[in-house]
Every structure is written in structure tokens, then in C-alpha cells.
Image (cartoon, rainbow, N blue to C red; front, side):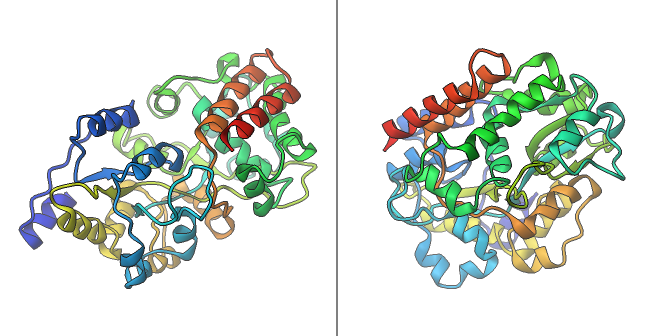
Length: 370
């Protein structure tokens, strides 16, 4: 719809190709190897995007941002999206993608199926586990790093979490041990669906399908972008609410969701239409277009004016409430550490490894990444 509107306003034709979420990064890699990259492409997580940025497939946006474009974004978004000097992903410092969605993490809950009172939700993880019906909770293995980063905020400051990600602080600490213990508690509480974490390249779409479409899962951990998935795949299903992840009963700090960028785009610096592509991406981030994403897809915008006046749907209100105190952790996990956490989380839930063994493996991955 926006592409058609842009053509009417400017005469520039934008062709939208939608490869779907499954294997998106692999498809993008294939396009890069074939030297057939699109002029504009969806930017996902920093770890997945780093190889493309390092290979020169993305236009560095810092000059445009400094020339006034930054006014379309909250300072937190700009901080989250910029690669700092010396980042472990070894991406040259700068910003390479523009985002029109600010996302948080939390729980999507069908109150009756999950056994949760939506009007009086649990305030601690222990309460949540006690209240959840058996086998009612699911989280994709690929999202366990985000689940654990969310929970880590109970025990660490943003600076301490960031120091672990950079390799300046160890993973083998009491704080991280307490964090990974969450997986043990969920397992021993009997609330994890099928006693396992779904894995594979389409693990989170599978979890979302079980919640929104099949409706046999009572609660899932996900990003706020999942509400847009529901609007597309199950528009008539609205019997769910969102919640922030409850606090640890023994935490030192108020829990904070990681602040992450949701939908956004990078401009192919090697493309045939660099200027036109940049102009289109800048147009998408203007308040009028961001509001379309809010209204049509339930996204949380990155524009400060819209955020101040935002009236979000009930289904996303709980997650949106976390925006005021999100984590600001500029450095992202390396691919090796991310993979080690995913594998380790699955092993903990299956009872194959202890928290201490998994943290040693994560530390090894961190050391190899440095």
C-alpha cells in the first residue's frame, strides 16, 4: 500500500518482494553471492546483518542522520542501531539501517488457556510458574538469548550486561548463573510445552502459529512485532494480552526488556538506484508513514512524536509499557555466543547439561570470538 502511495507521489516504482521469514538470511546470502542484492532489504538482527555490512552491501547512514534525519527517531533507537567502535562483530563504526519499529520483549498470554488472571497478572517469575497451567508456555530456541538477556536485567546493570557481550566481563558469574537458572525453574515447574524448546530455522514462526492459529499454547515469549504477525495470519483472534516478563524474586534491579529494533531496512550501497532507494527508506520513516505501520500492523514506532501520543491496541499494551525503561546495550552477541546460548538452553531444558556447564561453553565461545 505504501509502495503504491509512494509511486503516486513521486513517480518512482517500488517493487516489493516478500520471501517470508523462514530462511530469510540464507536467501539474502544467496542473493549476495549471486551479486543480485535488492536496492532495499529488510534489516534484521545485528549478528545476522554484520556480514552484509562488512562486505559493503549497506550504505552508511551517518551523514544523512546528522543532516536532520535523526529527528525522526528517538535517541534510544539511534543508540541501539549504531555500531560502536571496537564492537565484537567487527563492523566499522556507524549506522547502516533505518528502523520504523521499536520492539520490546515480553509474554503474549491467552489468560484462560494459560491459567493467568489478566486483571491481576503475576509480578514475579515464581508466581507465574505457580499460576501457569502445565505445558502451557513456549519459547523458540532462537529467542532464548533475548529471554535470558531480559531476565539478566534483574541481576545486572546495562553496563554490566554490555561488558559481558564485549568480553570484558565473564559469563561464569553468579549473576549469569541466576539468570540461566530461569530455564531450570521453568522446566522443573512443568510449564514448558512438550518439555522442549522448538528449534530450527522456522522455530519462532512455529511457536507463533501454535499460539495465534492453532491456539493450543497458552503463553509465549516473543517480541512485540508478533502482534503484527497475528494481524496478518489470524486477524479475528484477539483473545490475548501482552505482559512484561515478571521480575525475579531475588533480583537486585527492576527488570528491563532489551530495546531492539523491529522492522527496518538497509540500502544496498552497490545497487543501481542508491539515491532513489535512500529517498524511499527516508520517506518510510517519516511520521505519516510510521503511523500507517502503527494503525495497520500494531507496531511501536520509533518517531518520538508518535511515541508520546501513541494509543496502542490492548494486545500490545503490556509490551509497549516497557518502552519507558528499556535496556540500552549497544554491543550485540557474536554469532558463536548466540549459538552457544541457544544450544545450551535446549540442553538445560532437556536435562542434558547443568547451568554451570553451559556457561563454561558460552565463555569458550566468547573467548573464541574475541
